[in-house]
Length: 305
Image (cartoon, rainbow, N blue to C red; front, side, top):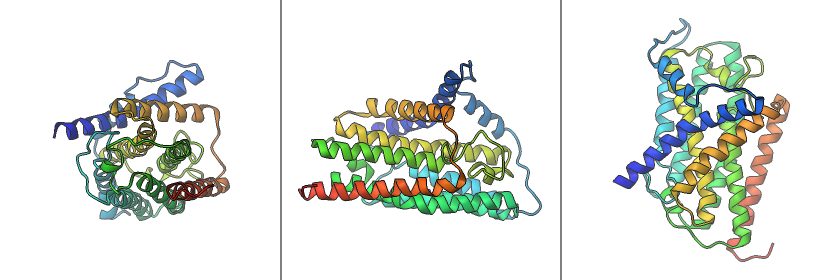
């Protein structure tokens, strides 16, 4: 039980730290002092103390969506181990369950955006639905690759014991880590797919769906986003840690630093894609996932590539 508690605490620390590292990296790249490391937590604390304002055109669906969004993400969050630590929840086949939970959270926020009747939020919901449908195969194939190499369908079993891997399999696992990192960027609406710093409703995707939320509801959405970032960042770090037989003390800092610094640098020096290029960008990741899965299958079958 203590190991499960430690895993949960480490996951929470990762979730709270990634945004801080991103903000600090962007500040350093811009030559600024920047905001405090945990300023985002303080902002959410202020939002939790404020009441929510609802439009007269919205229904109960709009009000419960942030709770469903956070609840589904939190439940998926509890299935993720940090390297060799044991997660709080686990069962055979939970990699599929986690994928469905993440899809449920996305559907909840999409329906809430459509419920407002706003044309801007409707456009954001349509884009989010399209990108979610496109990135889902990449997520499933990435999980299938992990299950194929390790022989298990549970995150806890996949990362429980390090295995000796050939050079070819090591390269494939590194590509799996890269795929999960890009999926995190797409799911959280970061550059190059979206830019959370902009406030132009016509081109926003994730942020525009939350325009009508305030107070506690907005705080719940921010917390869910942190948890979702931690899920993908830790899975990517675990894929690297299992290659080199390293434990949680390596995977947790790797998840925070690699994710935060990379996103911070990209957002500082790269512009977001045009909306017309996002589809091509996501389909490229899906194709890479399929290629990685096929390569892994051939390696497992000892077929020369």
